[in-house]
Length: 242
Image (tube, rainbow, N blue to C red; front, side):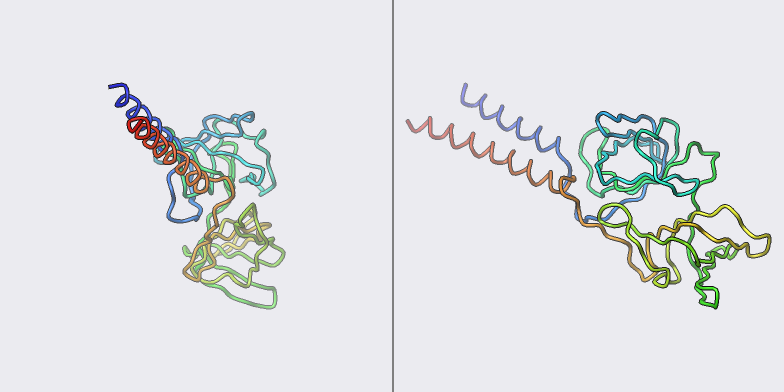
């Protein structure tokens, strides 16, 4: 009876370890999410949020996590964030099985409130190259972005990396920062910064998992948990044979 209790104890311990660690993800791609910040823990480097589907999630912040202002694209720090702010975030596709689930945060674009002008989502319909540089018309046909002078980035393995506007094709998905639109139709704007989420070639950025994120942690903890189970079984069997 004592041996059986020990077996059950070891198995339950291993199951708890496996359920406490992140789920293995099939891809290292980033996931885009929108919602509202509900709590910021600067000591634990965590942000609790309510997503647009009303579910809750915790973002784990690392030294490479990037925070950008939705208003002008300037850099922010974790201490600048507060409950009630709205956001668009890019986080690891790997999440924990905890409630609420946790995920490694890559980049978060933050607005002070839902009433503040947010960085503009922009889907490219057509691309034209002229003497004044590249011009992009959106899929609604009501806004043209003149890219001359714009700083162009894409999501890198850590933070943002510089990108070439000339690589942008029809179908590209962008986030653009601009606040002045010429009174014409279509409206015309000169963005200061553009974040390219996909270049319109049919692919989206796929970011390899960072060291210490959910995928690598899962492998490590899973090996530990399974090793405990094997060690327990071996020890009990050895005692029975004495």
